[in-house]
Length: 443
Ligand SMILES: Cc1cc2nc3c(=O)[nH]c(=O)nc-3n(C[C@H](O)[C@H](O)[C@H](O)COP(=O)(O)OP(=O)(O)OC[C@H]3O[C@@H](n4cnc5c(N)ncnc54)[C@H](O)[C@@H]3O)c2cc1C
Image 1: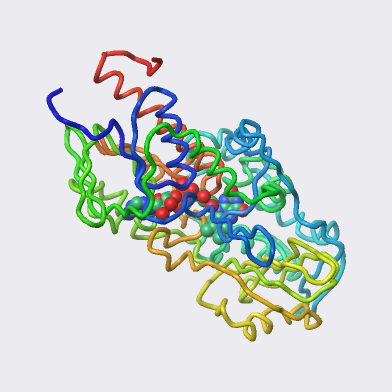
Image 2: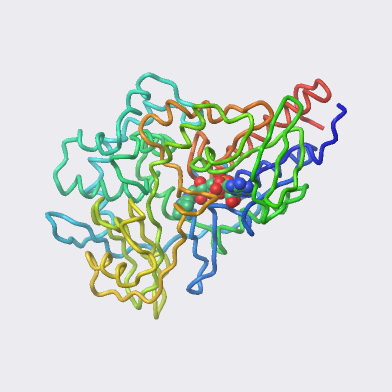
């Protein structure tokens, strides 16, 4: 090969997918350079020391039923910790606030959950593969709201189930694809309570950024922060990647790990396929808010669910101290609440609790973040059927990866790692085949 390359593979993005891919390439003897737009690792995994705690402004929880992320926890000896156990639970019924315990709330939503996603294992028997059964495709036409509306539930059950799903899906339920609920639950073989725990309880004691730092620490190549990629050109020989400021690097291949919602904005020649661009342009259904509050203590640890239409549908204690407590909350639509206004958030909180005083707020605006423009992947109806397989397909020497296009726990840390592992295997196999005619990348 006559070309001069700067490296074998350029990895765009140092979130969990990019970091994992670069580490795996190095382990297979493939050189890489990682280009990351931000001044930090992690992307949508974003830990900040705030309120004296490790606050997760992005991804929060992980679980041993998520095989890729848990393998990394074992590999690096990281310590997982759980949120404060709720002693009280609040929810809405007949327009009034009810108080009980978490098992009571779980009992209320159980019939709805079973009716909605109890058959997810049948519709999606292998959630680790791209689904292509006709039954699943049919279900993928529905919004989550349509699927909920079709159930025979009391008003109280309906409201409680809707609030719980806003917590999971971070978007308006009439935009969320029913397939999102099916995929999440199929990942725990149909056990919705395990799915609920997997997505909302355990995090790393010293902050989730320990995970991405550990993976990045094992990257053999260079990681360049503050390096936004502005242009990608690819051809049969390789890929040229230009960084803000004008420097262009050339490699045999590139891996693009940018979130789905920004793919169509990138300057790529030849352009990504129409299906990929349209999937990106249509955008994810997730457009919600995640907000942290430090409140005056002491208070008992609690969970609270309102309705899908409230600015905050779910609020709960994450850390509880003698003098104060830290709450985390979620709503379907970030534009419904000003997360910098204590007054507005106090009002939203007062639908359940007018006895709690907010002291400080913290949030990151992911929907406006130019390197994310989304929170966590939640597909719209039919988006999965129309674009999942195509989004995973490389375009010549340009490969795609990321949690948003993973199979098993798409939209989670686990999916990002799954995707990083897959793409590193594909890329190194291709390179070894090209260079030595070998079928595997063993060196
Ligand atoms: C508020 C919130 C809550 C969440 N909660 C959970 C949770 O509880 N559990 C869970 O498992 N997951 C959760 N997630 C999702 C999880 O954080 C993500 O799915 C995962 O971190 C995505 O990893 P990734 O590497 O695929 O993408 P990203 O982390 O988005 O990484 C992509 C990287 O590409 C970079 N990039 C983008 N454009 C360019 C460019 N032009 N040039 C160079 N670099 C570029 C970005 O800066 C970023 O670092 C949450 C996410 C958010 C936002």
